[in-house]
Each structure stands twice: as structure tokens, then as C-alpha cells.
Amino acid sequence: MLAHLIAALINRAPGPYANRAYAYASMGQYDRAAIDYDLAIQCSPTITNPLLSRGNCYIRLGKIEEVSYYITPHIFERLRG
Image (cartoon, rainbow, N blue to C red; front, top):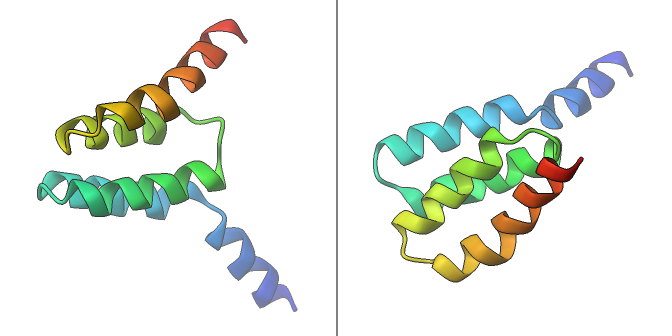
């Protein structure tokens, strides 16, 4: 039971996803990095690094619409709150 709980907590930690996303981005694999940044954001929606890094991946992929749709509202929300 305790091992199951620990495994569930680890699976909800954003660090592993963010780290792997950074590695993908460093290799120019921005599509794969964006997916892992999404997972990191789902695990901890209040941290900003994965959010901004995901935006950077979208920019590098030429997906400007995604940046304005997904990223911009979150940035303004954090500036207000």
C-alpha cells in the first residue's frame, strides 16, 4: 500500500517530465519536448518554467497560434494573481 502511494506521488511530480522535456528540447526534438512539458504542467499547474518552455517549443515549431492560445492567458493570470 505504501509503495503504491509513493509511486502515485512520484508520477505526479513535474520534475521528471520537465527534465526529459529539457533533454528533448536540447536535441531539437521540440514536438516531444512539448508533450512532456504538458505532462509537467498537468502535474503542477502553478509552476511557470514548463509553461514558458512549452511556449518556446511551440515557437520553434512555428505554432504561433498555440502560443497565443495556451500560453498568453496563463502568463496574464500569473501577473494578476
